[in-house]
Image (tube, rainbow, N blue to C red; front, side):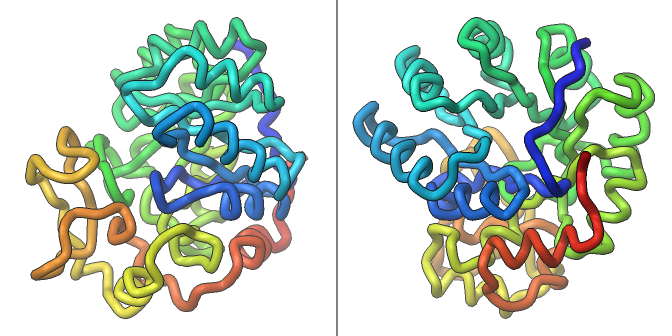
Length: 275
C-alpha cells in the first residue's frame, strides 16, 4: 500500500449528494479547507465540461469527483484529468473497473466501502484511500457495521499512515472528534452539507428535514428511486417519492439552520488542522 497525503487543511470531507451537490457546494467546501465532492452524473460530456469549468471558477483547490453513474464513458475521466482534477471517489460496483484507469491518468482513487470484504477488495485493487460508510449514514446504506466497529479494525489493518476517511450520521464537532479518536484521518459528512445554502436541493425539502427528528427517518428497501439496489435512509412522507433531497443520516436531530458550507467547515473543524 502506498501512502498519500489528503489535500486537506482541516479534516472535513463532504460526501457526494448526487443531484444535490453541485459545483457551488463542492467548491465552497474545498475553498474553506475541507475536501468538497462533486457527483459526476451529468447527461452529456458537454454538461460535464460546463460543470467542471464552473467548479474551477469557485476554487483552484483539489475537489473529489465521485464516479457514481454506472454508464460512465471513458471520455468522462479523460475530461476530468484534462481539467486538472486528480482525486476520484469510486464504489463497490465500479472500483475494480476505474482504479487502473485513474492511476494511468495520474489520479488517486478513494474507494468507499462498508464491509470488511469490501476493504480487502479495495486494498487488493490498489485503492489510495478508504472511505468507510457506517450503518448510520443517510441515503444508500450498504454497511452492516458501526464506525466503532469499522474504524479501529481498518486502521489496525492499514497502518498509521494510510488515509482513512469515515462517516455515517456525523453532524457535530463532537462527532468529528470521536471519529478522529477512533483512528480516522478525516470525517465524511453528507446530511450536514445537504442542509447548507449551497446544496442543490429544494428549499422546501431542506426545511422538511430541519423540522424532522432522527426517529422519523426510515430505511427504505423498496425497489424504487435512484438506488433501488440499496436500502436508503430517508425522511418518510405520505406523498413525496424517494428523492435524494430527503435522504438523511442518523445525526439529523443535531442539525439546525442552513448556514453556508464554509461556516460548517469552520464550526466543525475549529481548533483542528491536518498537517
